[in-house]
Image 1 (cartoon, helix red, strand yellow):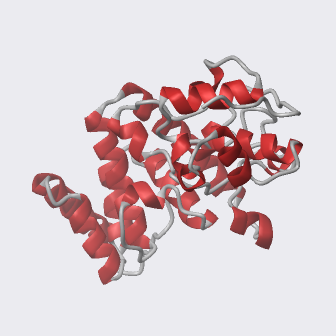
Image 2 (cartoon, rainbow, N blue to C red):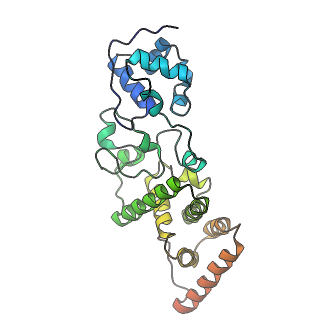
Image 3 (tube, one colour):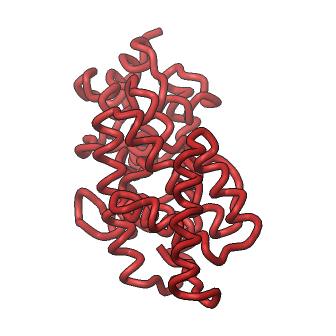
Length: 263
């Protein structure tokens, strides 16, 4: 199928996501993305999947219609990734940069669970709920979450399964403190800003004396958090026993009134 070039082209910006660029391209040509893909010869129902899986034929058709270098199209997708990076990459948008998104951009790194600040303007990425409600967030929590995001990025880039398990244990325990259930990988992509920030902060906390901090948190927690603690250490009973021993010693020192639910 020979595709006629579009009247107006739009140059992709560095790190732009294919679906976001296609939306800009469609808007420039005064049409919807579905109409644009139909013109190119691509089934519109697969539009969302193009970010994660695009074949050479589709890439060639898009580049020909938009009059851009064919190599640019696959560079805007999430190419084959290690499993850790794949699980930490959201299938749908959960955050963006208020400044850059208002200009119609959608960048690839916004989909990463470890992304915290916009790589273009430097502003903190926000969820849609955060932008709408404008809820105040503790600066201390934001700083700790930013440190946790950096740790998570280093772990994802290194591919260390051991380090990743350690980080996910911290997230699982943080979920218990918030009475949450589910997959910790998905929780890191939560559109609820306080939940995501709390879990990222837990990753930062787990890097320094994690057993002591888990014990401190476990001294006065409800049944949901206790179950989360058991889940977090279910494959490492010796670590769980150590946490309990530390917690018991702390209770003897400070008495039963201590309550620590902050990371």
